[in-house]
Length: 325
Image 1 (cartoon, rainbow, N blue to C red):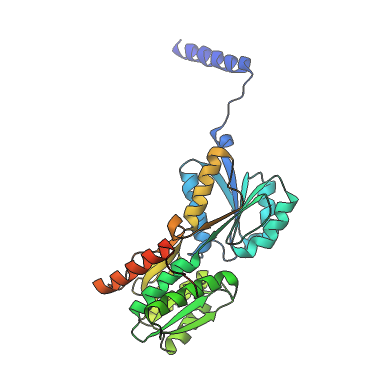
Image 2: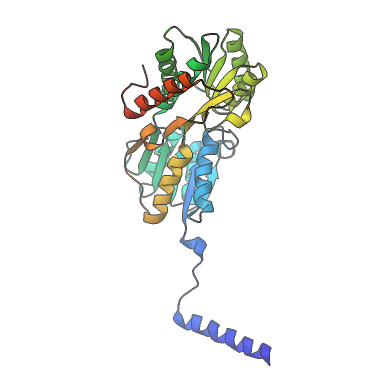
């Protein structure tokens, strides 16, 4: 008898739902869908791509969005990956990295009603929002730390590619170091690859043989190889993009934080609420939490050294000093 009553009750609920003419709406259907085309090294670079992915994961875990991604190794070209993300019904599509610019703009022209975000380059297309960072500011502070840390008065910079974006890292680093020690020697080399840790280790060993005892990398997974080589050879290093201390704990003094995860999370969070993204170009520096330094580890600065770093940090943040030469 009890079971029969439950059946009648459920039947009535079903009939009422049918009479209303409304279908149950899935909470998943209500969420905005975000697609991201990762940079060339893809997931596991322990740097740029991982940081962008982390920002979307945070938004997803908070129940704000659903997201999908493509990697260059699977899609073959940025354009194919971006096109797949559009045709799969994503509401907003993100291209991560300056190398995606040309293909993202081709895709944006094919889908003028779709919204796109380009990270690390600037587009003039109306349906593309550009997000860039003042890497020279954070790199200036990395240079200050390197100058305070070195004992040989020789430091090194490893870039992933000889391109304007990576020059911003190098220029800031050089200017920061020379602001503390004008006579410091700085070795600079571009690997031509963001995904080769073995190459990064080779470049690091060459710089170490030339007396460099602090290495700063802006080279993605290639840079991870350099950090580990620094640790193996008992010198110091400075990471990039994320806090890379945990990849070489005896070597990494600090990392130049490029908060791609924060920038993407903020834009996606607002898009989930309003279905809108800011137009034009967003440039993020120290004043907007776009760049900065991770905690000092592996060494301990003296009170005098910490005071020097604090003074330069404030000057850069306030715009009192140019962070590039």
